[in-house]
Image (cartoon, rainbow, N blue to C red; front, side, top):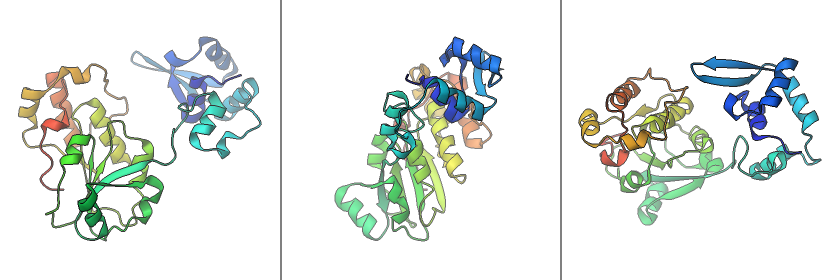
Length: 269
């Protein structure tokens, strides 16, 4: 019998939204004392009180095939566990990291010749980066395509994250043989954009969020309520950073977000 998706998430993450869970199974596990319920405002969460017992219960109720999914590639393992390649903690263990290199050496020459480069995330530690360089992460394609820091006094690596950046890519940014001396993130100024930045900041604590000096005027003129229609402020969003506080103030004041394409690229990194 196929394991329910929410149970797989509960095993992997330790908690799931109550609305996603099967009430009959929840009632049974509550009676056994294996799980508990937690309420935060209107949100109710199912959490694993005894993860070891929960795993034993799931394995007994939903036994896996003889194939061990943990020995298989990510998507194959997801199919064995739950019947879907996209159901699991990760869909791909290795992904491409798209970037441009501005400075000297072979990476800069290849960027100049081909416009951009890519490396598999598991090969990032092998990139020949110098002792001193700076990292710029860019959320959307058009600003990444326009980025040009050929005249920067210190080499700059501009990395394209994509709108829904994978944890695999973010984790890879910790793997350079020589870490960057500065990290700057340039993304959308809405709830999702802030969440991407804070995920990046968790992996790279030195990362800063780029906020242009005229951000208030840009929000007043170009802020879009449409950007927030399908977004919610993430429960884990930490407003402590001064850059985030400034953006949160604008989002709440205008009930709108701001797309990064209307903002000029950072002049320096």
